[in-house]
Length: 162
Length: 202
Image 1 (cartoon, rainbow over the protein chains, first blue to last red):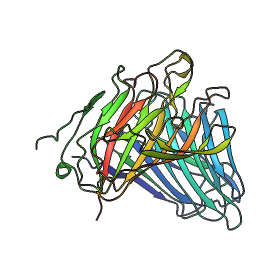
Image 2 (cartoon, rainbow over the protein chains, first blue to last red):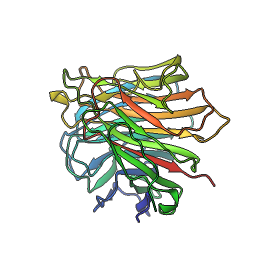
Image 3 (cartoon, one colour):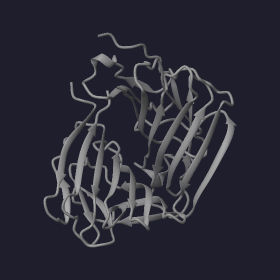
């Protein structure tokens, strides 16, 4: 009997790299959870995801962000990535839950991002939509305009319902 | 091993199994349920008390298609419809971040838990959520739940997306043995899917 919550793959960067990609994701789970911790090798950046190498404007998001001085919300339609939040030169972390990734509806994720830069930073909660009914078989994490620093770690978990 | 009793009042459900039948690990699947297109309520009942915490993960949608809009659901425990709940919410609708709360209400959820309907422009759009319920089997503590939920519809005009952090308390010390998720309008579509997990303590 398969485990309910199990790691599928982990990648830890031995040197700076522009992206981390999980390929050939099995379709045997109910949900996926991506856990990432890392920092930018090039200063202030943003962490983004793409599914199945889709770089079309098929993504959108609604976010809720606390900056340390205010709380804001934003919505972005028809973007070319699933936007998770800020990354900088101190370690950040995020959890990304991808629901029914092998199902026949559009794909929706919830993300939780925590970034503190000892004087700035953000805590962000985001819902992202990928307007595709395709099964997610690949996930790419990348920064907007820099490499991940060495040591960045991403683990993909599968969660399986009864 | 025989399945545990299941008395889901609405929707379809399957997969109850005893904790001992599950694979190793602290996070176990207890039951799943899907919408049937004609019932507003999903019920997990006869929940075993052998875990420390519970988690529900779901995708959901209402069958109502009168307009392109979003509805909400009520979260209730042990079929208690009395005003024995309180709730707080922090949400973002794409333009404003706001916080609200209510005391002595009849459920956790309504007003704060967007579920898209089946309007023509919302095809294949789903609401999603994770509900954590801590110490659900305690006989001495009130029960607290955390809900992280959201929906994005790729729209800048109403209905827009919502991302929500939501807490609620059930002012009752009984162990939770059943959980209802009741839509305020329409029924859960057949594409709606719910999974209840148990998290073990040491």
